[in-house]
Each structure stands twice: as C-alpha cells, then as structure tokens.
Length: 332
Image (cartoon, rainbow, N blue to C red; front, side, top):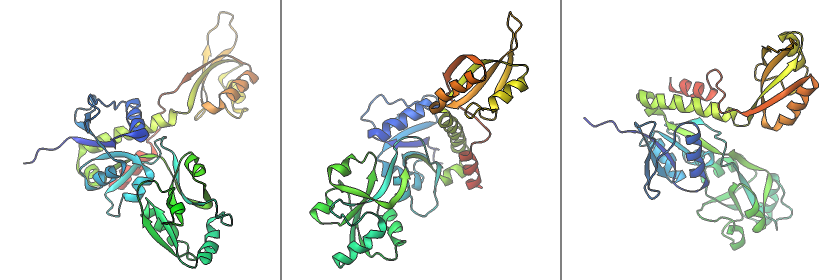
C-alpha cells in the first residue's frame, strides 16, 4: 500500500510574488523554514504534516490541477489563463492583497486615431487584414476578442518581453500585464479605453478532489481560509479606545451613531468607567479603517471624547468567512 504523502503547498520560487507569499503565510501562522535558498522544498515547523514546494507561477497551476500539489499561491491572471476546464482547481481566495496588476490591450502611441477598443475596427480596415495580437495569455485574449464580432484577428502566443513586438512588426498590438505603467511609457505604448481584460492579484488555489477525499487536506484549507480572511479583513483597520462623558450607554451610543465614521463593525462596545470624582464617563471601543483615523478622532472629540488610544488590529474573525462557505458549498 502506497504511503500517503505530505500535504503540499506550492509557492512561486522567486521574485516579489514568492517573497510576499512567504511573508503572508508567516503573518497568519504558517511560517516557512527554508535553510537552503537553492532547495526547492521547505517545511512549515508548526505543521509537520505539510511541505512547501517552490515552482514557477504557471507550473503551480498545472501541479494543483493534476493533484500532485494540494494548494498553491500564484497570480490570478496566471490561474485564469492556465486552469483548463477539467474542474479540478478551486479558487479558495481571489484577493490576497499583493501583486496587483491589470491585463490590458496595448497599442503603439503612434496609433493616434485609436483610443478605445471600438477604434480598432478603423485600424483593421486601414491595414486591410486581420489584426496580429501577441500575448502570453492566449486563452484570455481569445475569450476577450471573440466577443468583438466586428474584429478579425490572428493570435500569436509569445514569451519574453512583448513591448518590442509592435516596433519590430511581428504584432500590431499586444495584450499584457500592467502594474506601474512605466514600461509602457518607456516604449511609447498606450492602454485602450475598454481594453482591460481583468484586474489581478495573488490568489490561493487548491485541488478539488484532494479536498473532497482527504480530511487532513480539508482541515488545513479550513484553517488557512479562517486565518487569511481574518488577517486580510483586519489589515487596513485600527482599534480605537476612548473615554466619552454621558448619562448612559444608550446616550453614548446615540452620540456615536450621530457621526459618520465611528459606528464600529456592528456598533460601539461601551462600558462604564469608575472614576474618583464619580463623573459619568464611559469607555468606548471602536474599529475604523486606517484611512479614516483622523476623521474618527475629530468625531470622538466632537461628542466629548478624550484619552483616545489607537492600536493595530491583527485579526477580525466574524461568522463563517464567505471564502470558507464557498469552498464547502463547492465540495458538496
């Protein structure tokens, strides 16, 4: 009888995507131990039943689809391009909060009369032939252009730097990833209005059959989704503690709800402060977004608050995360 292998999670082997993947897992309690950076395997000391495999982002999708790896973190653009139609990959979490980019239709700036997707018909008519489109994402590109009945095109599956393709003439336009836009500007290229195929960031994927058939794999998935969802929900939030003078908890709540920012998640947590002077002070605990901190402090002062203390929030656990609910539903 073949021995059951360890539970495997595959991460990008190098670059920003790989480093941020390891950092995120460490933040949620899945710290990776990799003593030799040249090795393509590592461990997670807290979970001895797991092992880490380092691969190229595209290979991660293939490994998860085949079931040789249970979980993977890769770019969502790569996952959607390479997932195939066999139904064996579940996207457990589509927004891990890093590696943000977009997949766009890109043309030379010299095409001054072309500013949007609808203008491509004019260029095709001017050229007198189908448009030549180069992309590392042939499947997503074909899906996008197949919806444009007014356009005829020949798709060129390409690797390497695509920015030079329009200049040397082996393609008229390209479909490629854009993050900062610097490369486009440097190469005299432009994105077209209506030409965004998708917004992408890092995502967590898993093999469906392994989740259905192996209790240990499914339990790891549950734990991963619980802590990832709670961590990401808390990432841009702050906890505020403040003292507010009032006649009762209900009076304090009314003051808080009269403001725009300081309402909390479901509402404020209010408790009485016992003072030497026997004044009516109440302690209020609130959760606000980091972007709204200054506004929150102003609102607290406006309702008579003082002694404002602010701290980071590591996790916000609510009822069952929607990502976990979606996974469990997909496994039925």
